[in-house]
Image 1 (cartoon, rainbow, N blue to C red):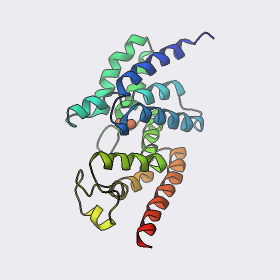
Image 2: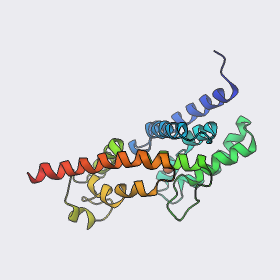
Image 3: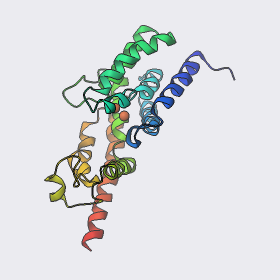
Image 4: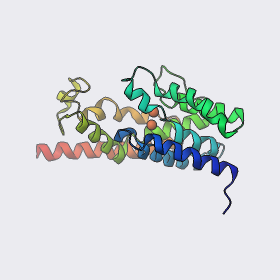
Length: 218
Ligand SMILES: [Fe+2]
Ligand SMILES: [Fe+2]
């Protein structure tokens, strides 16, 4: 089968991102990128006005500058840096300039936390929601325990211990991550479809931590 021009460029970018992120730390490796891509495609299927080509390229590239941010110990923002590097990288593929700008806007705003660039298009909202979805639900639980394990934190602690502790301490458990950040993620979703998926995943997380609590107390 002859690939369309877009599919050929997409495959090239896919391989470029894979080679860069496949050995990144587990919470932000190429597997994370592929899950975000899948989430974004699912959301886009429910939002017909969204441009799927922009979404697919932006989802693939959204964390491309993560390794640099980690080696610089967070001294710069991977979203801004990624958008800047992709602006020149994407010119090589001869995409229309308007498309490149929209892709870079998605990358720049995917980390929106109230103080950075706000997602301005439906495509940027979808990439943002797709990334947030990967931090909650069963995958979110797995990622939270993975991170806590890397930091040598406890498997579980009480809500009081978790909430009265510092990040990167022994008390920085998966439960702390849930209480401090992850339980609030559904309130931050931007699309209607994203909110619905987030609500289902949030319920699963809530029930999971209730189960841990009941096993310890019974
Ligand atoms: Fe990111
Ligand atoms: Fe991400």
